[in-house]
Length: 328
Image (cartoon, rainbow, N blue to C red; front, side, top):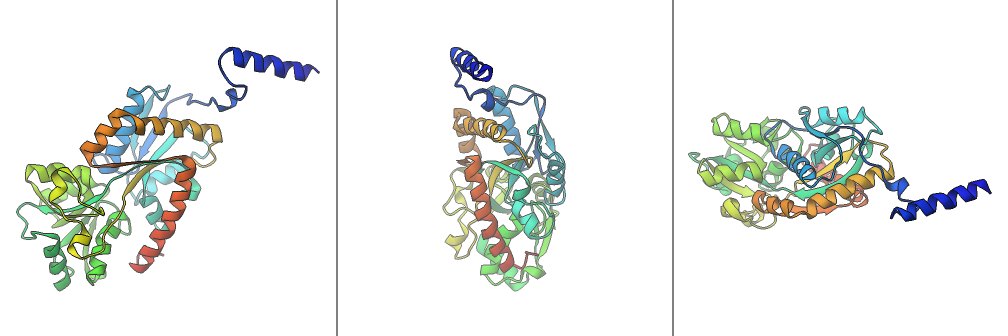
Protein backbone atom coordinates (compact mmCIF):
# COMPACT_ATOMS: atom_id res chain seq x y z
CA UNK A 1 0.00 0.00 0.00
CA UNK A 2 2.84 2.36 0.92
CA UNK A 3 4.63 1.55 -2.34
CA UNK A 4 1.43 2.21 -4.30
CA UNK A 5 0.94 5.59 -2.59
CA UNK A 6 4.58 6.51 -3.28
CA UNK A 7 4.08 5.73 -6.96
CA UNK A 8 0.96 7.90 -7.11
CA UNK A 9 2.76 10.81 -5.40
CA UNK A 10 5.74 10.48 -7.76
CA UNK A 11 3.51 10.47 -10.84
CA UNK A 12 1.54 13.46 -9.54
CA UNK A 13 4.72 15.49 -8.94
CA UNK A 14 6.05 14.57 -12.37
CA UNK A 15 2.86 15.64 -14.10
CA UNK A 16 2.73 18.87 -12.11
CA UNK A 17 6.22 19.70 -13.29
CA UNK A 18 5.29 19.06 -16.90
CA UNK A 19 7.01 15.67 -17.26
CA UNK A 20 5.59 12.28 -18.10
CA UNK A 21 5.96 9.64 -15.35
CA UNK A 22 8.81 7.98 -17.31
CA UNK A 23 10.73 11.18 -18.03
CA UNK A 24 13.15 10.78 -15.14
CA UNK A 25 14.37 7.51 -16.61
CA UNK A 26 14.89 9.18 -19.98
CA UNK A 27 16.58 12.26 -18.65
CA UNK A 28 20.26 11.31 -18.76
CA UNK A 29 22.65 14.13 -19.57
CA UNK A 30 26.46 14.36 -19.49
CA UNK A 31 27.75 15.20 -16.03
CA UNK A 32 31.34 16.16 -16.88
CA UNK A 33 33.55 17.09 -19.81
CA UNK A 34 32.80 15.26 -23.05
CA UNK A 35 35.71 14.18 -25.25
CA UNK A 36 35.01 13.96 -28.97
CA UNK A 37 37.83 11.99 -30.56
CA UNK A 38 39.01 12.56 -34.12
CA UNK A 39 40.83 9.41 -35.35
CA UNK A 40 43.13 11.45 -37.62
CA UNK A 41 45.51 14.36 -37.30
CA UNK A 42 44.40 18.00 -37.32
CA UNK A 43 43.60 19.61 -40.64
CA UNK A 44 41.99 16.65 -42.37
CA UNK A 45 38.40 16.02 -43.41
CA UNK A 46 37.56 13.99 -40.29
CA UNK A 47 38.97 16.79 -38.16
CA UNK A 48 36.79 19.31 -40.00
CA UNK A 49 33.72 17.15 -39.33
CA UNK A 50 34.51 16.77 -35.64
CA UNK A 51 35.21 20.44 -35.03
CA UNK A 52 32.07 21.43 -36.95
CA UNK A 53 29.87 19.15 -34.85
CA UNK A 54 31.38 20.27 -31.55
CA UNK A 55 31.16 23.94 -32.53
CA UNK A 56 27.47 23.61 -33.38
CA UNK A 57 26.45 21.68 -30.29
CA UNK A 58 28.13 24.42 -28.25
CA UNK A 59 26.49 27.27 -30.19
CA UNK A 60 23.07 25.60 -30.08
CA UNK A 61 23.52 24.80 -26.34
CA UNK A 62 22.71 21.15 -26.86
CA UNK A 63 25.31 19.76 -24.45
CA UNK A 64 25.15 21.09 -20.86
CA UNK A 65 28.84 20.51 -20.03
CA UNK A 66 32.20 21.47 -21.49
CA UNK A 67 33.63 19.45 -24.37
CA UNK A 68 36.98 19.00 -26.07
CA UNK A 69 38.24 17.73 -29.42
CA UNK A 70 41.19 15.35 -29.17
CA UNK A 71 43.07 14.12 -32.25
CA UNK A 72 44.22 10.53 -31.77
CA UNK A 73 45.73 9.59 -35.12
CA UNK A 74 47.65 6.54 -36.25
CA UNK A 75 47.28 2.92 -37.23
CA UNK A 76 44.44 3.43 -39.67
CA UNK A 77 42.33 4.83 -36.81
CA UNK A 78 43.37 1.94 -34.54
CA UNK A 79 44.89 4.31 -31.95
CA UNK A 80 41.60 6.16 -31.52
CA UNK A 81 39.43 3.06 -31.44
CA UNK A 82 41.70 1.28 -28.95
CA UNK A 83 41.42 4.32 -26.67
CA UNK A 84 37.64 4.36 -26.99
CA UNK A 85 37.42 0.62 -26.40
CA UNK A 86 39.22 1.02 -23.07
CA UNK A 87 36.43 3.30 -21.80
CA UNK A 88 33.52 0.91 -22.29
CA UNK A 89 30.29 2.08 -20.71
CA UNK A 90 31.35 5.72 -20.35
CA UNK A 91 29.06 7.95 -22.47
CA UNK A 92 31.36 10.96 -22.06
CA UNK A 93 33.69 9.61 -24.76
CA UNK A 94 32.66 9.66 -28.42
CA UNK A 95 34.53 9.36 -31.70
CA UNK A 96 34.03 10.62 -35.22
CA UNK A 97 34.12 7.59 -37.49
CA UNK A 98 33.99 6.59 -41.15
CA UNK A 99 34.26 3.57 -43.41
CA UNK A 100 37.79 3.13 -42.08
CA UNK A 101 36.19 1.60 -38.98
CA UNK A 102 35.24 -1.29 -41.28
CA UNK A 103 38.27 -1.40 -43.55
CA UNK A 104 40.80 -1.48 -40.70
CA UNK A 105 39.04 -4.53 -39.29
CA UNK A 106 38.63 -6.26 -42.65
CA UNK A 107 42.31 -5.78 -43.56
CA UNK A 108 43.47 -6.95 -40.13
CA UNK A 109 44.84 -3.64 -38.90
CA UNK A 110 42.68 -3.76 -35.75
CA UNK A 111 40.63 -6.51 -34.09
CA UNK A 112 37.93 -3.96 -33.26
CA UNK A 113 34.84 -3.50 -35.40
CA UNK A 114 31.58 -1.55 -35.20
CA UNK A 115 30.25 -4.37 -32.99
CA UNK A 116 32.67 -3.27 -30.24
CA UNK A 117 31.09 0.20 -29.98
CA UNK A 118 27.70 1.89 -29.82
CA UNK A 119 26.79 3.28 -33.26
CA UNK A 120 25.12 6.67 -32.65
CA UNK A 121 24.60 8.36 -36.00
CA UNK A 122 25.64 8.86 -39.59
CA UNK A 123 25.90 12.58 -40.23
CA UNK A 124 26.94 13.14 -43.81
CA UNK A 125 28.65 11.87 -46.91
CA UNK A 126 31.83 13.53 -48.13
CA UNK A 127 33.11 12.40 -51.48
CA UNK A 128 36.73 11.79 -52.42
CA UNK A 129 38.54 13.90 -55.01
CA UNK A 130 41.66 12.96 -56.96
CA UNK A 131 44.09 15.76 -57.67
CA UNK A 132 47.55 16.72 -58.89
CA UNK A 133 49.53 19.93 -58.70
CA UNK A 134 48.58 22.55 -61.27
CA UNK A 135 51.92 22.09 -63.07
CA UNK A 136 51.59 18.29 -63.33
CA UNK A 137 51.85 16.68 -66.78
CA UNK A 138 48.77 14.63 -65.82
CA UNK A 139 45.90 16.65 -67.28
CA UNK A 140 42.90 14.37 -66.68
CA UNK A 141 41.66 11.21 -65.04
CA UNK A 142 42.19 9.37 -68.33
CA UNK A 143 45.82 10.57 -68.41
CA UNK A 144 46.26 9.15 -64.92
CA UNK A 145 44.78 5.77 -65.81
CA UNK A 146 46.71 5.44 -69.08
CA UNK A 147 50.02 6.41 -67.44
CA UNK A 148 49.51 3.79 -64.74
CA UNK A 149 48.30 1.19 -67.22
CA UNK A 150 51.63 1.47 -69.06
CA UNK A 151 53.69 1.60 -65.86
CA UNK A 152 51.87 1.05 -62.51
CA UNK A 153 54.87 2.42 -60.62
CA UNK A 154 55.29 5.58 -62.70
CA UNK A 155 53.53 7.85 -60.19
CA UNK A 156 53.41 8.04 -56.40
CA UNK A 157 49.84 7.95 -55.11
CA UNK A 158 49.11 9.63 -51.77
CA UNK A 159 46.45 7.99 -49.61
CA UNK A 160 44.79 10.15 -46.97
CA UNK A 161 44.47 7.10 -44.70
CA UNK A 162 46.28 3.82 -44.12
CA UNK A 163 46.83 1.18 -46.80
CA UNK A 164 43.77 -0.96 -47.17
CA UNK A 165 41.56 1.94 -46.07
CA UNK A 166 38.89 3.98 -47.80
CA UNK A 167 41.30 6.03 -49.90
CA UNK A 168 43.13 2.91 -51.00
CA UNK A 169 39.78 1.49 -52.15
CA UNK A 170 38.89 4.75 -53.88
CA UNK A 171 42.06 4.45 -55.96
CA UNK A 172 41.61 0.71 -56.35
CA UNK A 173 38.16 0.75 -57.93
CA UNK A 174 39.02 2.76 -61.10
CA UNK A 175 42.49 1.23 -61.40
CA UNK A 176 41.16 -2.30 -61.03
CA UNK A 177 38.46 -1.66 -63.64
CA UNK A 178 41.20 -0.36 -65.98
CA UNK A 179 43.28 -3.52 -65.40
CA UNK A 180 46.09 -1.65 -63.64
CA UNK A 181 48.17 -3.92 -61.41
CA UNK A 182 47.66 -2.35 -57.96
CA UNK A 183 50.38 -4.53 -56.44
CA UNK A 184 52.99 -2.59 -58.41
CA UNK A 185 51.61 0.85 -57.58
CA UNK A 186 53.63 3.28 -55.45
CA UNK A 187 51.28 4.03 -52.55
CA UNK A 188 52.18 6.51 -49.81
CA UNK A 189 49.90 6.55 -46.75
CA UNK A 190 49.26 9.62 -44.56
CA UNK A 191 47.25 10.11 -41.36
CA UNK A 192 44.89 12.69 -42.86
CA UNK A 193 43.94 14.56 -46.01
CA UNK A 194 45.73 17.62 -44.59
CA UNK A 195 49.05 15.78 -44.54
CA UNK A 196 48.52 14.44 -48.06
CA UNK A 197 47.72 17.95 -49.33
CA UNK A 198 50.98 19.26 -47.84
CA UNK A 199 52.94 16.44 -49.49
CA UNK A 200 51.34 17.03 -52.89
CA UNK A 201 51.84 20.80 -52.86
CA UNK A 202 55.43 20.26 -51.70
CA UNK A 203 56.14 18.02 -54.69
CA UNK A 204 56.74 14.90 -52.58
CA UNK A 205 53.97 12.84 -54.25
CA UNK A 206 52.45 12.98 -57.73
CA UNK A 207 48.74 12.32 -57.15
CA UNK A 208 46.47 12.30 -54.12
CA UNK A 209 43.02 11.22 -53.06
CA UNK A 210 41.37 13.21 -50.30
CA UNK A 211 38.22 14.76 -48.90
CA UNK A 212 36.62 17.37 -51.12
CA UNK A 213 36.56 19.98 -48.34
CA UNK A 214 40.38 20.06 -48.29
CA UNK A 215 40.96 19.83 -52.03
CA UNK A 216 38.34 22.31 -53.32
CA UNK A 217 40.07 25.48 -51.99
CA UNK A 218 43.35 24.55 -53.70
CA UNK A 219 41.55 23.85 -56.98
CA UNK A 220 39.80 27.22 -56.69
CA UNK A 221 43.10 29.01 -55.98
CA UNK A 222 44.78 27.36 -58.97
CA UNK A 223 47.31 25.34 -56.98
CA UNK A 224 45.75 21.97 -57.84
CA UNK A 225 44.04 20.32 -60.79
CA UNK A 226 41.22 17.95 -59.92
CA UNK A 227 41.07 14.80 -62.08
CA UNK A 228 37.93 13.01 -60.92
CA UNK A 229 35.54 12.60 -57.99
CA UNK A 230 34.05 9.51 -56.34
CA UNK A 231 30.44 10.73 -56.49
CA UNK A 232 27.77 9.30 -58.79
CA UNK A 233 27.14 12.73 -60.30
CA UNK A 234 29.22 15.89 -60.67
CA UNK A 235 29.65 18.08 -57.62
CA UNK A 236 28.82 21.81 -57.51
CA UNK A 237 31.30 24.63 -56.90
CA UNK A 238 35.04 24.52 -57.60
CA UNK A 239 34.99 20.76 -58.23
CA UNK A 240 32.26 20.94 -60.89
CA UNK A 241 35.02 20.73 -63.53
CA UNK A 242 35.86 17.21 -62.36
CA UNK A 243 34.14 14.26 -64.07
CA UNK A 244 32.99 11.23 -62.13
CA UNK A 245 34.87 7.97 -62.74
CA UNK A 246 31.86 6.45 -64.56
CA UNK A 247 31.90 9.44 -66.94
CA UNK A 248 35.44 8.41 -67.85
CA UNK A 249 34.41 4.78 -68.30
CA UNK A 250 35.65 3.33 -64.99
CA UNK A 251 34.25 2.12 -61.71
CA UNK A 252 34.81 4.43 -58.77
CA UNK A 253 31.61 5.60 -57.04
CA UNK A 254 32.35 5.55 -53.32
CA UNK A 255 30.31 7.14 -50.51
CA UNK A 256 32.76 8.31 -47.86
CA UNK A 257 30.36 8.76 -44.92
CA UNK A 258 31.07 10.42 -41.57
CA UNK A 259 29.39 9.35 -38.35
CA UNK A 260 29.81 9.08 -34.59
CA UNK A 261 30.25 6.07 -32.30
CA UNK A 262 30.23 5.81 -28.53
CA UNK A 263 31.68 3.30 -26.14
CA UNK A 264 30.33 -0.21 -25.89
CA UNK A 265 27.58 -0.74 -23.32
CA UNK A 266 25.94 2.69 -23.43
CA UNK A 267 22.39 2.62 -22.07
CA UNK A 268 19.27 3.35 -24.12
CA UNK A 269 18.86 6.72 -22.35
CA UNK A 270 22.47 7.72 -23.04
CA UNK A 271 22.17 6.67 -26.69
CA UNK A 272 18.90 8.61 -27.02
CA UNK A 273 20.51 11.77 -25.62
CA UNK A 274 23.34 11.74 -28.15
CA UNK A 275 21.04 10.79 -31.01
CA UNK A 276 18.89 13.81 -30.18
CA UNK A 277 21.94 16.11 -30.11
CA UNK A 278 23.13 14.98 -33.53
CA UNK A 279 19.65 15.20 -35.02
CA UNK A 280 19.38 18.84 -33.90
CA UNK A 281 22.86 19.62 -35.24
CA UNK A 282 21.96 18.21 -38.67
CA UNK A 283 18.59 19.99 -38.76
CA UNK A 284 20.09 23.40 -37.90
CA UNK A 285 20.37 26.18 -40.48
CA UNK A 286 24.03 26.52 -39.56
CA UNK A 287 24.78 22.92 -40.56
CA UNK A 288 22.83 23.28 -43.80
CA UNK A 289 24.99 26.27 -44.77
CA UNK A 290 28.15 24.30 -43.97
CA UNK A 291 27.06 21.33 -46.07
CA UNK A 292 26.64 23.66 -49.05
CA UNK A 293 30.01 25.29 -48.44
CA UNK A 294 31.88 22.00 -47.92
CA UNK A 295 30.01 20.05 -50.61
CA UNK A 296 28.72 17.52 -48.09
CA UNK A 297 25.51 15.53 -48.40
CA UNK A 298 23.66 15.67 -45.06
CA UNK A 299 22.49 12.14 -44.34
CA UNK A 300 21.29 11.81 -40.74
CA UNK A 301 20.62 8.30 -39.46
CA UNK A 302 19.29 7.37 -36.02
CA UNK A 303 21.25 5.02 -33.77
CA UNK A 304 19.17 2.02 -34.85
CA UNK A 305 19.45 2.96 -38.53
CA UNK A 306 23.20 3.49 -38.12
CA UNK A 307 23.71 -0.01 -36.70
CA UNK A 308 21.82 -1.56 -39.63
CA UNK A 309 23.70 0.65 -42.11
CA UNK A 310 27.08 -0.30 -40.63
CA UNK A 311 26.27 -4.00 -40.82
CA UNK A 312 25.24 -3.69 -44.46
CA UNK A 313 28.22 -1.56 -45.44
CA UNK A 314 30.67 -3.82 -43.63
CA UNK A 315 29.49 -6.75 -45.74
CA UNK A 316 29.69 -4.72 -48.97
CA UNK A 317 33.20 -3.48 -48.20
CA UNK A 318 34.39 -6.95 -47.30
CA UNK A 319 33.26 -8.16 -50.72
CA UNK A 320 35.02 -5.26 -52.52
CA UNK A 321 38.21 -5.57 -50.46
CA UNK A 322 38.36 -9.32 -51.02
CA UNK A 323 38.11 -8.66 -54.77
CA UNK A 324 40.94 -6.08 -54.53
CA UNK A 325 43.08 -8.44 -52.45
CA UNK A 326 42.92 -6.16 -49.38
CA UNK A 327 41.02 -8.45 -46.98
CA UNK A 328 42.69 -10.69 -44.42
